[in-house]
Image 1 (tube, rainbow, N blue to C red):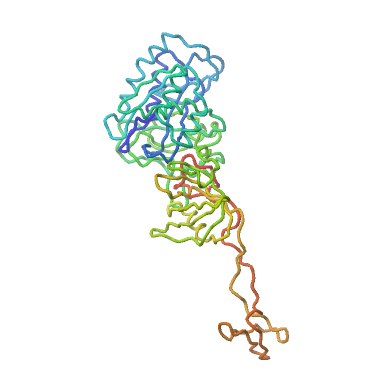
Image 2: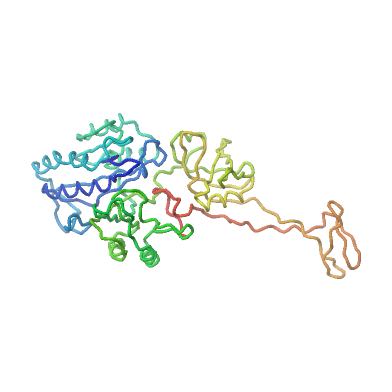
Length: 432
């Protein structure tokens, strides 16, 4: 499912928890983990984080494990399934779309809810295109028809793209997010979360990431909108998230669910030539800095990279990313870099990170030579006039100055935005 929220509120992940609860009352089991799938962050039709959701249901067999709690009842997940009862499936399908509409911000601008029910996974190629490029609605619909899927939409059919892509995600190399939700009676009031408990859990659990931003003092586990999410913990080990959940002090949690996600994977990034970087695409581009960077109003930094085919790419490191403009400001023409990020509908490449591959030698200011006779440092006679020893009065020409290589402020290596400015899909970098 996709696109049940709007810029003013709502939450598609919460609607999926309603469907998980509905499936349980319909006699269906959750197979595997619910999936939170981020898609192309550059598309102009996204609401906020451009996430779509999916879950697999069937008749669970074998061991089960807890992946959530809804209505004070444990949500159990099974690794394997046999064919579910056809009557249960029909009952679920009849009620699911109504449940989606009840949880949607229907009628608000930009809300185009869609629900897809497919008997099997869709081709992974559909996911890769949806996370890296722009998928026409007709292409998503054709994939659904070939898979024998059913679907429901309201307003436009644009939500079909995200819903179909969420079913198509292969799910390999994942991360996880454990999302806790607020009591509905508290919606609209300030969230009550003890920030120090979050920071302590993050310090003591190495697998957690993007919990807070020490540089800006922002807590990153809680949204800043009027949606039902209380907090979300992201990590690379689901067992750690399950343990960490109970250590966060907050207002009462109404429900919680563990999602398998593609967050922090960099799936949207692919190596491209600068000439092939069209509107709304993301890329990694390797090239050489063409000329000195310029600082723009607001602290943003613009510089131009020329790739190996001679095509120029105008890059901008925006001030809220903190690290990136500081690094970009120190680049000089001739430095070799790899940049990654994306385009909107302009040609500007918005930086999400950069790697310095090779630096052109820097030289410090000339240092006057030392007198070999008395050992004193010579003094300058003025621009272009050379140097003279203040003791024995010996002279040297201007070219006698000693030029030491300057140590770069930012050496060869990889640089990421400050955590509060990182995109959900951005490759995980070192925490500050």
